[in-house]
Image 1 (cartoon, rainbow, N blue to C red):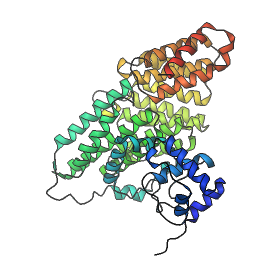
Image 2 (cartoon, rainbow, N blue to C red; image 1 turned 30 degrees about the vertical axis):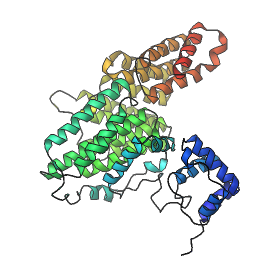
Image 3 (spheres, rainbow, N blue to C red; image 1 turned 180 degrees about the horizontal axis):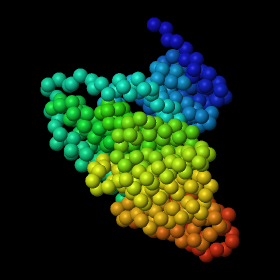
Image 4 (cartoon, helix red, strand yellow; image 1 turned 135 degrees about the vertical axis):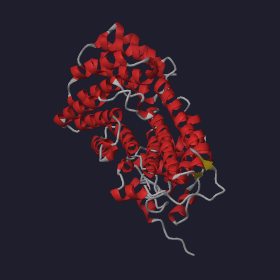
Length: 458
């Protein structure tokens, strides 16, 4: 059977201004950059075959996407290259796909060093932020038929084990950062949790509880990747976590995951998308059925999103509601484990971010300082991030030496075994913000800049 010429690929190579020989050279450079040496070494004939309709194997489509994305300064997917069917491109999640095989595949790729480099080097895609409609959410609550009787039998004790594992790693994340011990989490998720999800359950209640527990652990894997600056990888875990949460019919958990997606979008300056996601996190029973502490968490991220899009009045109202929600939390109201970290210090941190987005730097300084005063030692990672943000706002208000003193404290915290891309980014930003002051011979600036450079060189 005659192959169909790949017009998509031919058009993109033309847009890039590459001959087939040049395309092969750029492919090989991208392969070396991605540490995919075994894929390098292609020539003009390979490009000709691909244009002629031959499908490349292995990592070749992703490598060519990387080369063309760099050349054209926009995200190019395998689908755009004519190498994948509609809807299957990495940049567009297929909400209809079964989450279990996808979770197994993502875990396997995450644990394989070569494949993981491709996952991490992929670009964060705004296409992943477009949520499915209400019909999808309703359909997902209808659990698929049970597995055959030969499958592993799953009990409420198995659910508790996954929940305990998730809580333990949440504590590690808060204390040491997302780059610490995440591999062990992914290994447990892939080898143990996927097996449990494919098992037979004593009741639908246990079944839904297991999907919720798996969704929360998958979310945590995404959150730790986000904290470590691995944004494209985090996106994929967040999407899978949302599918599992939807299947469990746990609406507050879905809200929690959407809140994390909004947080990531805001950190990446995708303000409109962040607002849409934070609004979705508050929709219907996601907020109404949530406990007071979780309501406060959802609400304060929404306040930050409102501020980031210029709606200061609505942001102020949302902040007040978040304060009231947290004040309503008490020992008599059981909270989900996932909210253990959110208290006065976290609310103050997010309030400060919101005020900074509103242009109220002095108010932001005051609330960041409150967060620093009230956060316990168990939350060392977030403490370091807060200090990093505080120093930046202090510098913006003109108190250079105070900012340097704050940043020295941030570095001191980070040097105590914190592995966090977010924390590290505050050091990168610190050096950039200090750049105009380097020639002024300010001792505090010189000392801090040298320490920051040494930290980043590690």
